[in-house]
Amino acid sequence: MRTIDDFSLPLEYTTPLLEPLGNIVRDWAEREVIPFRREYDEDWKDHRLILPAMDKLLGVYGLQRFLWPEDLGGWGMGKSNYFYVAVYRLVEEMARADSGMCVAIGVVLWPIVYITVEPHVNRRLCEEFAPMFCQTDRAVFSCMAMTEPQGGSDIENVELLKGSTIQTTAVKDGDEWVINGHKLWPTNTGGVADLMAVICTTNPGSDDPGDIAVIFVPADRPGVTQGEAYEKAGMAADKNGDIWFENVRVPLWYRAHGPGDDAKYYGEIVASGNMGTIAMAAGVMLNIYEKLGEYTSSRIYRGKPLKENDAVAGALSDLAATIEAVRMIGYQAARMLDRPELYGDRWSPEVVAKIRAHRYFAVDRCLEVADTAMNLMEACGADRELDVEKHWRDLKMLQLWLGGKQLCQMEVARWFYACETL
Image (cartoon, rainbow, N blue to C red; front, top):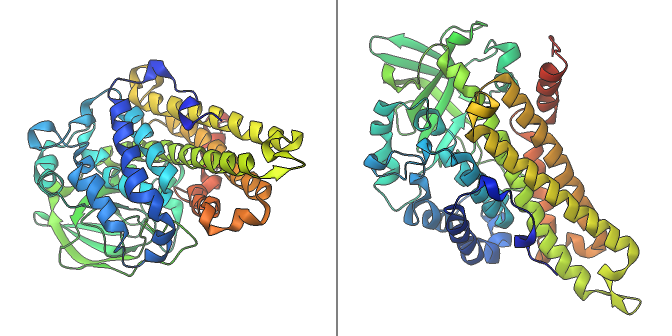
C-alpha cells in the first residue's frame, strides 16, 4: 500500500521550506497528538492533556511567531509570497492528527492576518502585540469574535448585509473605544483567549461597511468575561464559549485599520478561513485513508484481504481519487491567495466566492469519505480504538462554521450568477 506522501502535490507551487516545516509538524503530531487523541475527547473542559501539546508546537517550536515581523521576534511569513501555501501544508498535517487541535492552533494565526500580512500591515499593533507571542515558550491564544446570538453567522455575510445586523458596539470616548456586546462560539474562548479581534459596529443598524470595525482587545481588560467551554459532539481541543464585553475600554489605535478597510480586509479573513477548512478536510481524509488501508488489508474475506474484493476496491479507489482532487483544489485555493497579481485581491468578492465553492465541495466530499469508511468497517467503524469515528464526529464542524454550507452557496450564486438578493 502506498503512503500519504504518494498523493500528488503541485510542486510548482511549493518551496524548499515546506518539506522541513511539514516534517516538523508531522513529527509533533506523531509524538504528541495521535497516541493520545482519544483521551483528548475527555479533556474538552480543562485541557490538562491538550495544553502541553499546544505549548510544544506553538511556544517551544515557535509556530505562534509565524506571522510577526522578524525584527519583533517573529518568522516574518506575512511578507512572503507563499505564506498561504505554507499554511495549507501545516494545517493539513495537523488535521491528519486532530482537526480540533488544528482549528485551535490555526486560529492563533487567523486574526493576526489582519495586521501582519502585506499589503495591510499595522506596524504599531505589531509592536504592541508581538511580544505576547514572541517572548514566551507557552502557547498564547488568539480568537476571532464574530458570531452573535441574534444573527448567527449574518456577520460573515458582509457583501449583502454590510454589517447591518452587528449588535456589538464600539463607541468613541475621548481617545478610547468603549465596547459592549455578546459573542458566541469563537475558537479559543472558554477561558483560553489571550487576545481577541472583535467585529463591532460604530453605528448600530448601519449598512455602511465603513461602520464595521475590527478592534483588538486583550482578554485581561476589565469588562471582558469568557464563559465556560461548550461540550460539543467532537473537536474537544477546540474550545468555544461565550464572550461578554461590558464597557470594555481600549485605545482608538487598537482598531485594525479604519473605516472601509476593516470591512474590506475581512474578505481575506473569510477567504483564508475557507482555504484552511479545505486543508483540514484533506488532512482528515489522509488519515482515514491510512486507517481504512490498514483495516481492509488485515481483514480477510473469502480467503483474501478485504481490499481485494471488487466492490470494496471500487470504494477505496473513489476515496483515493477524492483525496487527489481535494488536495489539488486546496493548494490552488492557497495559491490564489498568495498571488493576488494573478487572481485578484484576496478580499475581492470573486476570490471569496471561488474559495467558498472550493470549500463546500471539499467538505461535502470529506463527509462522504467518512461515511464510506464507516460503512466499509461495519461495526468496527464506530470503535473508538480505530479513530475513524472521531474524525467522523469532528469533521461535521468543518461544514458548519463561517456561515455553513448555505452561506457558501449564497456567495457562489451571487458572484457566478449575479444574484442580487441572496
